[in-house]
Image (cartoon, rainbow, N blue to C red; front, side):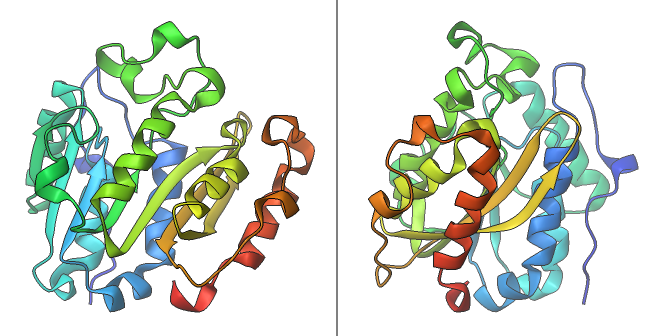
Length: 252
């Protein structure tokens, strides 16, 4: 049984490609923490949206290893440099995935609809001016627009379309993104959620949230938060903690 992850020294790089950082490490730690569940889940198709350096998708492939039972892997990125760097990272680790240069999953919606069992996303979540969103190069990896939600809000409905009935989504969020509202938004689509990893750095507070379909849980949004824009940052953690308690742990 292998629980290896990608080795930083073997991760390729390019000046225009986002290198593994605290958010990347937190996402991989979340996958490692959930590895037993992932192996029992036996995914047939795993996908990363925004593969960057390839550190996360390569780590996922390595931690599933031979026990992944022949799972297929797909990774996309809007940055063509990232596709090449990810390819080099994978080759250095002896793994392979289908790499596609596209915006989120553009052109793949029909092909992948309802078939992705595990999706991992480290989206551009940094609050920035709107005109910085979608720029070429490395800025595409972090520029998230107002509240850092511009790209996140594009990804969520696409994820809903691509995920299988037993699909899991792991997403990096920042406190400024209002993750409680993201959870409520996904709850309306029939997804339960829980925080797998919560990590604070000097500059940001990160939450790696896992979403999965569960139509048996009923959560009244008004009982959790009535005005998402008015939630003070200081009480965000308690709101997220409430989501953890409301989540259906046994099915995750």
